[in-house]
Image (cartoon, rainbow, N blue to C red; front, top):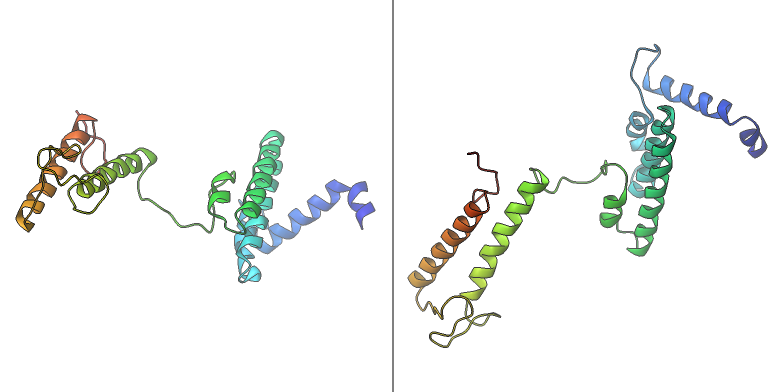
Length: 194
């Protein structure tokens, strides 16, 4: 079998391509099909072996690049998949970091944010600013100074009652909104239009 694969590699690839087309029901040349579609179709056969199916999907992605005569792209995909597999081994089977190295979006992964990268960055900065300000206003937390007039960044404000803490929180939110507006974004991270 190995000798046959080395002797006639094109024959093996064409036969597998015909098999995939038949399995996908593509009988006409005008019908669109690719190996990734086949990977999704055979997903139930892998049952709980999600990592093995991801490797199969990666190989299907590479075959699609080769089918479209993109040899450099296929080679780059192989390199990135090899890096991803090493990362899985380093992380003891966790695929979170490896998914970032893969040359395609993880087909089994969960979407982490509904917006774009810039919107996520603005939301992250806004929320971190609020958390930092709230931390400074809570006794017993790092960065809180209970000496009157010597607070770290808050001019020594020491809210004693619930109403004073709520007022300080509102002021902190207003300051964060003002800072975001100065950066050209709204409080939710969306770009403002002029």
